[in-house]
Length: 371
Image (cartoon, rainbow, N blue to C red):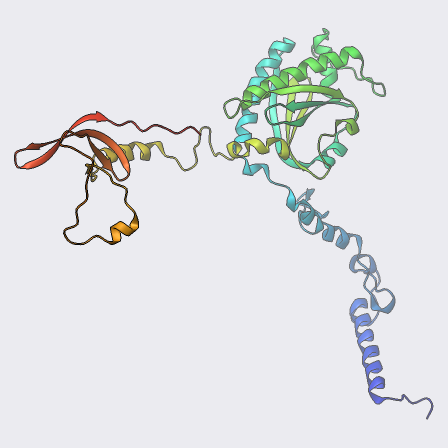
């Protein structure tokens, strides 16, 4: 009697729980109740109490790190949630126009600067987080911090080591057909920094000219850094637009990367949202011309005001049939011609045939009130 449960319901619940646990173990282990040999790594192992352990592929798929189609990262899972706040640069169509202009102008400027055959091409325009970009910069490199004076914010321009050594080699008379010599593991010399700084001033000047048709802006060079930690101009989680340019000089060359945080371009966001150069939202020049021509042939009602008298509402309510209103006007007083509440002309009253007429003497120009 002591071994029997005090409550039959509790005994039935315990048996149901044991049966459910056994069923879970059978589902996790296979049809025969035990995991098949060689399937533990693929389908996961059943832990204590029937808990299923995820394998590495399932974890990667959940986090969004699973690679498909030859290495293209899957944007599903937690990774997609984390990156959902990034604004796509495709929502700013005029940026592509700006960088296309920059490529054409920079190709000419670099040819004049190096006296060599230089080709500049645009590799990509992407949206990144500022912190992720700083961590992805291959060192050694030079990072130039510049200020957009009209926008009151900063941007970043990165020159990789390959382009640094190529520019130094070309400007100091290196032979064509030989790759630039790299000496890793040492800081950049003053000569190298000065030569690269001259090229950075050139790129910033062309970037100003590329933005000029949209909005006037001056990109002012602030400082040159070699440590990414000292080139921080925004919070790590802030979104930014990254444009990668490729500079080729025969068999030498490298990359220039221009980074513009979204906070920097926010003052000109409305301009960058245009679909084409010079677009005016809500305006159509053809329709405006047609509307202006049709307005000239529109019939409007003109009122001739002899005089105006200000009276109290009490006196108006006491009006009766036969009441008289005294006007302060004489036959030679000027008449005000109005369209609605707008005074257009003034003239004198007269008669033409059997009709009362008004001769226009003066056009009333509306005075614009100062803002």
